[in-house]
Amino acid sequence: MLTKKRALGVVTAVTLSASFLASCTPGGGSSDGTVTLNLATVNNPQMKDMEKLKSVYEADHPGVKINFQVMEESDLRSAVTADVASGAGQYDVVTIGAYETPQWGANDWLVDLTSFDDDAEYDAKDILPPVREALSHKDKLYAVPFYGESSILMYNKQVLDKAGVKISDHPTWQQIADAAAKVKTADSAGICMRGKPGWGDLFAPLTTVVQTFGGNWYDEDWNATVDTPEWKEAVTFYKKMLDDSGESDPVSYSFNECLTALKEGKVAMWADASVAASILEADDSPVKGKMGYAHMPVDKTEESGWLWSWNLAIPKSSKNQDAAEEFVKWATSKEYINLVGTKLGWSLVPPGSRASTYELPEYQKAAAAYAPITLDVMQSVNPEQPGVDPQPWVGIQYVSIPEFQDVGNQCAQLVADYLANRTSIDSALEKCQSIAQKAGDAHKD
Image 1 (cartoon, rainbow, N blue to C red):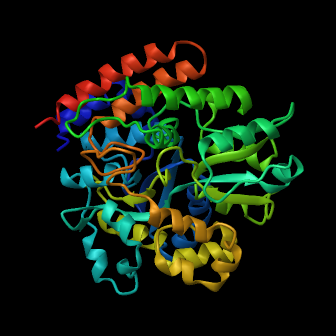
Image 2 (spheres, one colour):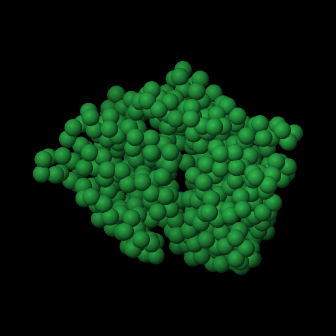
Image 3 (cartoon, rainbow, N blue to C red):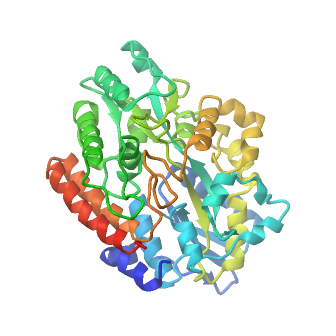
């Protein structure tokens, strides 16, 4: 269990910056009785859509104001971890991942949302079972999904067709590297991949590459296995592919940067979160109708997609828990999904959270290019053993121990230095091995 003392130790290095990021209008009631809910969320398009639509909620709830604080992914994690672990109460609603939710629920840091099951209109049973399971601890629900995802390969069919390149539904990484080299031009990269330091940035896709190449973070006895031939092969492959065909400065790219590059025609392919497909197929997207989608590339495994969800949770330290629960219900409801569809476009509906979403005729039509493959991948991946060898935790692109956030961030910086030619692969992996082993030692026996 992640105690408050251990959690504060995990975020010691970022506490000052996180405190700065967390500075905001205090929650609670004003002199006129208005309740302001402070919501910390990630700088992703779906969350920006929620911010656009908050006026609809506020109009129906005149005594409530929603104050969005949108941050980059790594900044959000630092700020929210520091706030929730310390009980500071800066936020009433937090956007957290499947990694944090069960650990924080076990520590009694989050409001138990299992009572949502009793609300027939909310219909919590409609939440996709794998996603709900990832957000539960001892059968109690501690967050609800705003959207769920796996990872897939996305490619511009027009660009690849022009170069005579064909992509199968189940490609290998070597096939994708070869294809990227063929379609790279002086004005366009062949492939974009995350390189920005962070356990949820660079290491989200890179961990899945390591796993399909036969490596992993730990063996079954919690011995770190970073300084192994499998890791070296995978990370060296990743760098060579980017050196040969990727963006010129990979360490400055993560989700949003690759998304923009693909939409603007500056890159031909991208392997990342399946939720991006809804943005690429939006009515205002310049590549709408031009995209193809495939399973995440593999090497030694049958699948290599991840399983993730961005979720809304309520810290126990919130002073506005009742109002926060009402807003969280609204933002993750069938009503909200229909609101997005009618107001913003059906291709922008948050995917991967509710089974009923995939039964809506409007969504089926708008998401025909990517909805079936998204569900297929989410149902095909194996969080218990995503790689070649068994592992002592459940999770794909992360290790579900409290120390991993810090381990992943430190190791991602080391690998980013390697991608940027500031260090060698052997030095990066040797140092990462030592960092990972210290965390693994705490979980032996």
